[in-house]
Length: 324
Image (cartoon, rainbow, N blue to C red; front, side, top):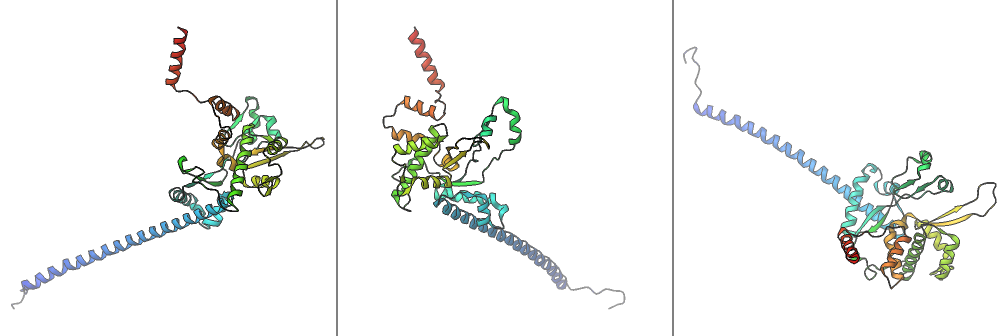
């Protein structure tokens, strides 16, 4: 080959190099895509594991709620964090929502927060401050007394299980009483606390000890309720939150007897409620009429049912026609 002249490469060698370069780049691109797929699979796996862990905690919360409600034990937020969530306490809202979804879709129940327990001492009554579960009414001349009570607790942090079934499935023929300790004892116990709660509510939410004893004497329940003493049954109703017993003693240095009054407890307000009271009264009085309905609503402090605009117009037309 003459000096200074470059050797020409065969065409087949050039084609081989051109084929090798794209193939190497293609292999490199494929390897990067595989890495992205692996990272995506890892993220999906982590998400699935987290979701599975949340579902397990939600199921654990459902079991805990069912066991507490079986013994009528209040389900407290602190108890949920301690016995269910453990070190996952910050996930309370998320786990609670999942448990609610499972309770409603499978069990026909839901967790409802109990109202804050009333605080009504003699001093507060004199100041004119009336505490209600979700409302505070203050007289206009006692606004300064509200300063010390300005920050009221909005939530109790305690829950019970309540049914979400339609009314058609809540009849006695479908919902049987528990067989523990026995069906008869459970039915008697439910009937007893329903009647006592109804009596307290019909007496403006407060019933004296003497008046309660007179009612129980008429019901032949002043000594025993089923196979248990009435005094023990009332203590159990206090412990489970159906009733609240308040004892007011005279001021120090003054003579006088202490007074005992009974009030509806948080569980009674949520489980029996005004609908249960009204249903109980209607069942007792077989011959029910509109006049008795008005008296019942007045006894419970409820407003009379308002008539619709069409009904009001018809009444007005009837009155004008009668006057003509």
